[in-house]
View 1 (cartoon, helix red, strand yellow):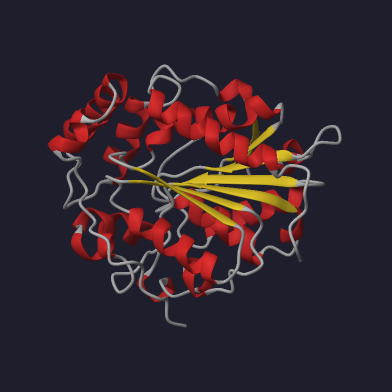
View 2: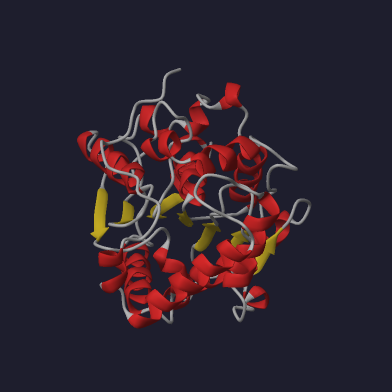
Length: 305
């Protein structure tokens, strides 16, 4: 199959001085800390090193020891995803380019989404590339949803957004998904469909670790080519300084044209997955509060099947 092109939106990777000047002091400081961690590990815009990227994520998440607050799933431990009580569960799928990320680097996002709702969290600790390339992550999140019982609220950031959208479009029990929140989603993985992939060597190298060239047009990796009309209520948050903002914009446009119940939020000047800087950064806290409120509003309604 052929994956359709995204919207014609520039894919600048670095925050401009103008964007940085419009961030809150807290968010600016955290963005600078992450940039320094990347630089210290030799991570730049034109090259990619798996160990360096993982170390940068770990460094930027120091002090966020929230693992004990979550129900975690590893292969062979699907039972921890079973829904206690009668309410829905939040299934959270983290970003990290399919090569990094964990409950320690992203778990606090899930906690802040779920806490206002009083919901249990299933944080999917899916297998990472390059040790486990595509379709390992997709198989793991598919198994995680299968391991739950009852209604599910689904959320994901960056490539976790692609995983969440895959479940909403393809899982045999997708009718149990009551609502979907995509936080700065990365949805295109081929140079023919993504401006970011075309113009940034680091992106191509990162994805090459996770997805073989011959798999780039697999339907699971081409959500914009799918029938989007039967999606559950969906929120998309895109940042004005996010290098993959075109993915979220194109998806929201196509989904709306298909008649899907989609709400698209554009946050000027925000970098990629700025939500992970909550609760310290007010812009990030507000974004997660809005996403949590959206999920809450649809927690008691089933989507069309």
